[in-house]
Length: 339
Image 1 (tube, rainbow, N blue to C red):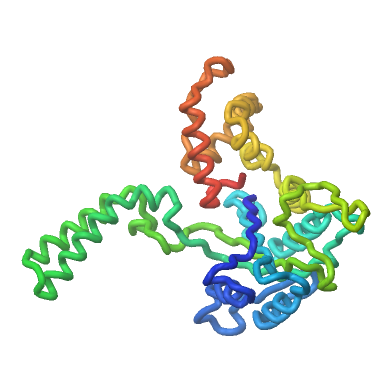
Image 2: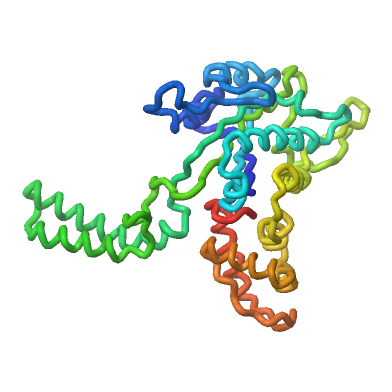
């Protein structure tokens, strides 16, 4: 399970209103008949139209300055294994989202308990993901892509009379290069913008910075995890515990759907990899044989080769561990593995 919390972009693309972001989330509905479109939902309702989302989020910004984010985006991206486990069922994903938002609410540290009824949010299911420039397979295809682009420019110049050459031979070179691309999907070179195959369902959640009463700030972007501050001479609880939220998110999924999570799919493993790669690898090698084999298969499917490193801590190869960490980091970014 990969979950990312992002504050509202306060640049040229996403200014005060949530409308631009909602428009972006409507991209899969373009060209579809009304009955085929995927609408927004919240904790108690389905089939919420985009205009209502914009109206309610934009109106819920009391006492926020122009420089304050008015909303946050939460992307919930289950792994291929998790989606397969639930049959890529959209209704189950919506059920999970509603349970997830309960854990989101209780992750706030406040004097008055926060519940999901205090949170103003709207969520939307998307079924597709596309390759981006960050994906490993796109980067590895790039040298071939650059050569093809150069040839295509030359062909265009010849057709326009700005250059000389044999167009047929150049086109044949392009076809040969396409065949040489290391990564293809359905026989075609993988390029940015191409839809990824397999189950790709994920959820985007728009959550207001203010609670449903428009009077209390609920910011998951707070730099305080769980702490107290003094306001007007009184101690006040503040902060949002992201670690608590991420741990609870995967436990909620596992309990709700009876999913047996492998070590490399856990938030704990991700933390180990970030903070102590040696400990991560030692923990991986210390798994029972069947779990260790399953872990290596998950890593292999994500394009990560696990180096053969001795179990003796003193002999662990730092360079190999860093390569492993780099590979897992890229897989996490692209949603290939559910860490």
